[in-house]
Amino acid sequence: MKKKKIFILINSLWAWWAERVIINLADKLSANYIVDLITLKDDCFFSIPKWVNYIPLSNTKNNILMIIQFPYYIFKFRNILKKNSYDNWFSSLEISNFINIIVNRKAIICLEISLTFFKWFFWKLYFFLIKILYPIAYKIKVNSFENYYMTQDLLNIDENKIEVIYNPVDLDKIWVLKNEKIDKKISDKLLKKRVFITVWRLVWQKNHKEILKSLKTINKDFIYLIIWDWPERTYLEKLTKSLWLEKNIFFLWDKKNIFKYLNVSDYFLYSSLIEWFPNVLWEAMAVWVPIITSNFKTWAEEIIMWEFKWDIKKYPIIWKNGVLLSENNFQNDFKSIYNTLPDIKQNASIINNLKIENITNKWIELMKL
Image 1 (tube, rainbow, N blue to C red):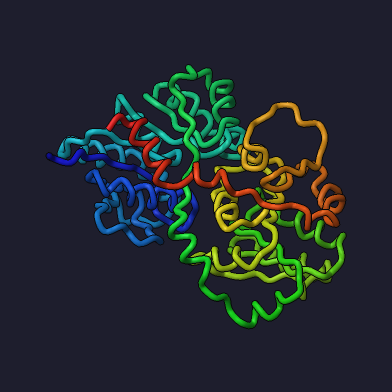
Image 2: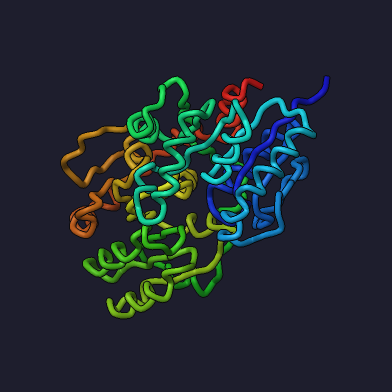
């Protein structure tokens, strides 16, 4: 029997978490389907799975050039579709979603971020295009129930066009990677210390400075690992020195294997203002690391409480998957729960619902393959 053929369109395969989700999903789908992974830029950080066809539409690695070449991508993508008989398809990230909708009458797209993000700065142009194009997509996959309700409300879209599918975790890979040893110079410094960790880009919206200021309010018997870089690293290093925390905070550059660091940590700290779907929180759960997070939009409540509520009025909230802190009062909330942190026990039983095999089946159902 001939295998069905699908394409996945995404801006690039650079080292962000949305791209890693797509790589893992393409890998699983390729077991039973022919998968073409099409990118706008030829910018690939990850290893392409053996049975997945990688098709970059241009040689550029620059985001500005990618935006300028928007009409070219429509032309090139349309030609690819004429030459191939795809049984179904989907796209992820906004520029790819725009192209998919313009070219396909039955475009399935992924909305990976809170729509409120696009009301900031120059992203307002994106929001304008989203309001025009997203309502005519065939299906919109969102990654949280908060995003589900927000998409209905802000875009006035029929709820039947929106599907909630959480991002997956590949437990088999994680459990292999987490057992790798970290550098001995670092591991020696962690002995008999309470270890906090954050994994994510050092950008304004992640609000790392709030964590640093919060840590200043507690005793110095801790180590804080920050995994990532760019573009706020210099600023945060200066802030660390001004707070006299140089001996407690380590800036590490290691995107290849975050799990070995998660495995030696006691708590995952997160103070984001607004989000895509932070897969690092899923992955922390998969390594049994309790989460302490601000109640960012979207999805913070669902990771901690496993449900979404509109009217939380009192913080902090200590729940079975971690702690939910107020965005506006993060420092005081953190200080108030610090002495009870040993009582927080991560309950990762729900992680089985997020196994990549189960999530892949939801995608197959969505695409009607």
